[in-house]
Length: 399
Image 1: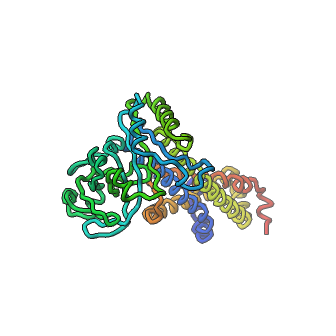
Image 2: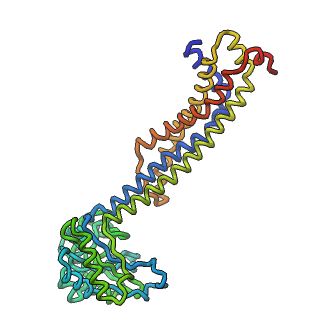
């Protein structure tokens, strides 16, 4: 039998049973949508990790409380880092080029007459060097601001654009935080993510000394962020910092040190693990869809047993019958894959309402189609084999 004739028979059978085909392909459609979304979510997670660290160099070192220590039931029992400790670390180090102590809080603030909760970061003068944040309008927070507990403030690009006609219009304007007035002296360049939990674009920066006195509460845990002078000195710098903390504090083990490279590796590994788990779910969905196709082909085989007997009697070979059933399986699964991909295009924009980062990709759609066709081929082999091995006499006498 010619391939074109086989293909014609396949399409006739599919069109005659279109409702059954649609129901059969549902599992494949769901599987294809899942694959596209899984790859988009996985890639989105990796992209978000890289965005968070994009503004930081591999020489960056973090000193944070180790909350995994079971003896600390609350933050008040952990000795806090101070400016004096930061200065001592810098004085005793031979490997650091910059250091900053910072604390974060969310407080009700008023900018340009608008009141809402905003992120406040108390920082020292070197925060911009450590976090690679540059001022594009006005001036940055200085060492004098920190020493004199001034009411200076620097805001992110996002806040400046949100509350003022132009970012430069923010300079000289006031902000109220906890009923205390601050004067905006600078606006940062747009950065996106980059401060581990805070978006610089949406943050108000004030002197650490001022924040400690007027903004932070007992639950605020400052962190120290340092910059090694060279990548090759990161491990040595971490050892020096640890020695100083152990000397200054009664128990230095309450603080843990991490470098940017380790954080990127851990975060990327976590994102890849999540991607693998979601891929496993998608694979299970495809298997269920494949079993559905196989069951439908077996039902079709019983319904078309006499037809197969006639085809064999007219000269169709085992190969012709096997190709016919395999083609049906592949076309059904391929149809499900294409519909699933098209659905994913419309579902993808809705993901923004879930706050789950997604990065659409062509590779995700190609992977979904490959999975769909492979599933149809794999689960269509056995029914096709059974159909091809029917004996003509038994098939013709089947009732």
